Length: 120
Image (cartoon, rainbow, N blue to C red):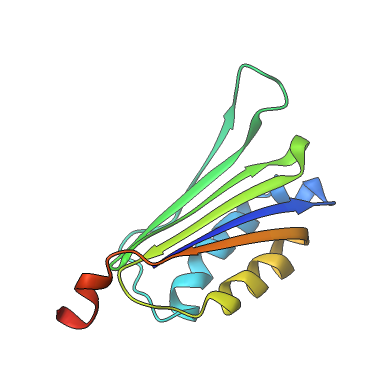
């Protein structure tokens, strides 16, 4: 299954915080019963448009991956949690909303790889 979160935040400083993105990537795998198999990595980037800067973070999990992309000057965040097994979507959304002070959140859940669930 795959959870996609798109958020709009009033507080751009939280979206510019490498430590906040790292905290999300470190905490979420354990909180939803997944296994991190790499250290989380966060990279700051700047696009050609001065508004297109932010952070991209990623952690590999045994079940697939978790990524975060922030755009502080646009007050926007994108989060992707992709797993070959089911997890508590509400728990991830609630944590993301609280940690990044997301004011407007849109979520999509995609059922992917269902033929592999439970070793079938």
